[in-house]
Amino acid sequence: MSAAPPDNDVLWARSLVKSHHGTPALRGVSLNVRLGEVLAVAGPRGCGKSTLLDVLSGMVPADEGEIWFNSSPVHTLGRAAREKLRRERFGYVGPEPHLVPELNGRENVALPMLLAGISRKVAATSAAEWLERLDVAECAKRRPAELLQDQRQRIAVARALAAAPAVVFADEPTAPLHRESQDQVMRILLTASRSHKITLILATHDASVARYANRVAVMADGRLAIPVDARDAVALSELEEDAPTCSTSV
Ligand SMILES: Nc1ncnc2c1ncn2[C@@H]1O[C@H](COP(=O)(O)OP(=O)(O)OP(=O)(O)O)[C@@H](O)[C@H]1O
Image (cartoon, rainbow, N blue to C red):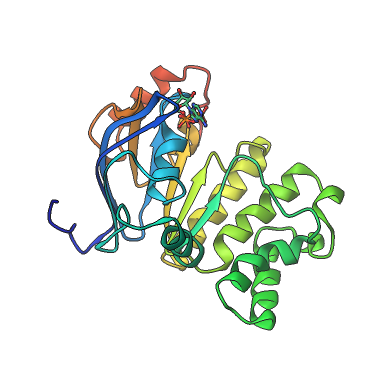
């Protein structure tokens, strides 16, 4: 086993390998994520972005490799310990909101806080504040079926941020939103990341979303296509070449 990672890396992964039913999705990915940064994991569809986020967040175990969170090993944890870690330290928002249909907007946002042991009153107050920040305060008492997809996704973003996680994993978080709404939700995610010192790991195939990040990890076929470095023209032009249809406007 290698030495523990440097202290200023919130996540540190080495040589991650993962296959889905024999199909390789990660073929040896090593990367570090710094405390408080916004890291984009970018690349074309099917290159392994979602799998990398799922493995880094402990949602699925890697077949091989190491993951360290705040200098503690994640790769040695069993399922229950990984679930506890995800519940208490990580937030997740995916391309679909996946809200609990029986709960209203505020209850959906409060749920991770209640599961983390926060009192009902504090969770309800915090949920209401995050719904307001996401511009969907009017959805607090309405169930998902009564809402637009845009409103549901904003609630999912509020749910990921409200429990004050150390890291938010956001997999194509703006996919169901229209363009103006995408920009607004990305700005809210970035503001929350800065003001609450939340590290944000963002999977996207869209160069215009990757441009919001401090650094970009461009993937191709289960590997990092080029070394992860400061957000630069090289990383983004690689992405734009791979995904010629995506917008480059910021
Ligand atoms: N549950 C699964 N079962 C079988 N194969 C899978 C599964 N999930 C992903 N794969 C395959 O693993 C590879 C990587 O998929 P992954 O979803 O991680 O890529 P991605 O870059 O996130 O793509 P997308 O943007 O389309 O979600 C692809 O070949 C995909 O078909």
